[in-house]
Image (cartoon, rainbow over all chains, first blue to last red):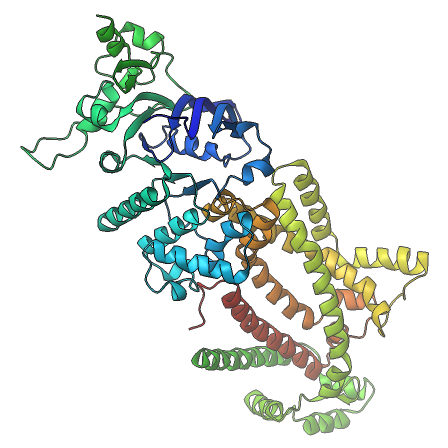
Length: 326
Length: 306
């Protein structure tokens, strides 16, 4: 596990312009991915994980103000012109989305949609393009690819549509795949198939995978490292094993406690009390402090830095800070 | 597909039948005596009665209607008292003119309205959009007779380059088409804009962008077909109405079309012609609806005709 990072995001801050000023959605997120690595980005809805993922390819609306840096193979994507970023989209970096129903265009044939990235980034004849589409459909496990290529999204099931979406993402053999809740809208059995498919494709192409999810089960199954976000900030990150076995941040502990256990004695789930703070009204200190059962005076006034607590694990919490100091 | 067409045809017959009954009753209920109108105010009552008998107007209403429908089925739309000509001949003389003018106006509406709508969607809530919306509001609010007369005064008369009115060749179509187009395009602009704004916010547009599709192609290839449906519906209704006769524009430009004929016939209580023009308009609406449904299924594969 060494070498230069493929994707390196540092101190990413994103705010949206609104009638009353700027609303801060992401406040200083840093993360990096090495080639071939799988990293999970987890958190509740509204914590900024999707916004972070969309900002990588600059897909946020014009009302968003993005600061910090996003380096891909050393090049800062935020400094590029729109036409230059476009060369990365669907080419070196691909993205798949949560809703395979709405993410595919209802009036275009599957073939037209999958060949779109090829048309944008590869010089190919119609014939070559068609063959490539069929090959891609076959590689994502679609039966009768020749026939499915001619169909429309509404003729396919949810799982099939997500496979089509993945085929489209794989068209130009990306070095990085960003998957934003790829299985959330699917049945449990189909979820497992899709995750399996992603893992296979990843191993085959040595592709890095940034998996955005709220499902810790998916993270445990797929990822090497995990980054936990809360209210626009990273609260804890580390390799999956240490974070799951020995969570340091009270929020991570809370998240893990709210997953039902399949083995041992059944207990009542412990929810995290309270709600995610609104963008307009962020706490001054640690953003989790109002919901944290262990919050102290300093937690309410100053934001804790992200510090290393153990090998391969960093956390942003005053309590952990103290534990290290002692 | 075949069963769909048959069902639609049966539906069309029912609609036209209903419309013929309604227009027939309205014509009967309208004040004025056609027989008296034909022979003039000074003719003796006996002549009026004879004419009334000859026209079958002394028979009970249901019998008159049955005779009317019987003639209709043979392609006989009746006889115009006022013009002293069979109605079919009258319509035949003018239908071509109206179809030309209607198509001309319709094309101007589409050429202006649809691109301006797309443009407005791209500049949604920016200065260009506000200016455009204001101009289209002006267009929509401007009466045909004001704008038409303005064109006659300033372009036809003032510049002396185009005919003042009447029919005959392309040059006669230009000003009335522009009048129709400018006053009618705002509907297309509004419809197209709001549906494009909605489409541009859809997930599949984000998908297209996420795969490196440049903005122009996002619009032409990914968004436009999805955004066209409301405009297609309106375009169908619109052309049907235009074919049925553009009364105001034809009157302003003294253009010998169905609309002008309808207007003159109403003034003269020329019932056979009035009923024929209403029925003709109804036929156009029914046909246009059918064509719109077929165009729908071509544009959006989720819509099937069965």
